[in-house]
Length: 239
Image (cartoon, rainbow, N blue to C red; front, top):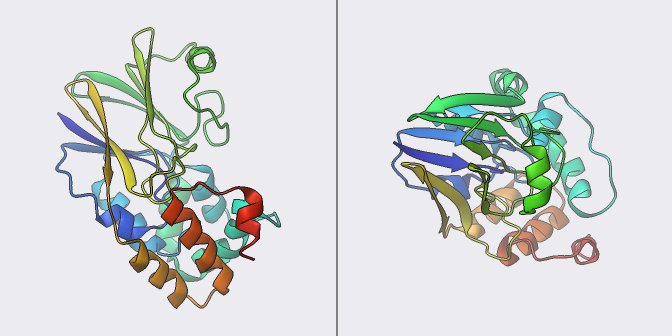
């Protein structure tokens, strides 16, 4: 059983479409939309190919029409891009995002999976990187062989008392200094992380075509080409 694990696509179709893996099942752990500006093919790909998918904080914000707040960094980017999503997504896309579960248990290939976007303690919002002790606390009362998460945009795999916590990294907006789209494969109980180069210039051209302010393209260019290695002040300098 070959399982493709994806997270944090963020409306970056060029990145998602560059992943050419064959798979028996596909798990998507949230944030299909926001930040990027090509949400429709990303949502439709997940609708067609995901065996199980859960809601991320950005999926929730788009589906529930939560107005973005913030004057700097990623918050400012989301505040401007979110209304664009509302203008292009059809009702069926919005309904799909709104109906995604916050958590999902599934048994695949004889293994028990828990899918959440952030952590079992706070499924959509808690940021937690590869900290074994903190994850050990979050795994109390979790009945699973694999806990699949996203949200931090940082790939990792931790084996904690027989439970593997897997973050595949971000497909559409990596933040670990590597600009290539990140994902994971789980096969026969083993986890491997993968990266694939994609056409960042095509992503930027699509953003530019939307008519959004030029700083939106400039920030995305800086974030995507550096693999997210920007401070908030550096991001704000583009605006």
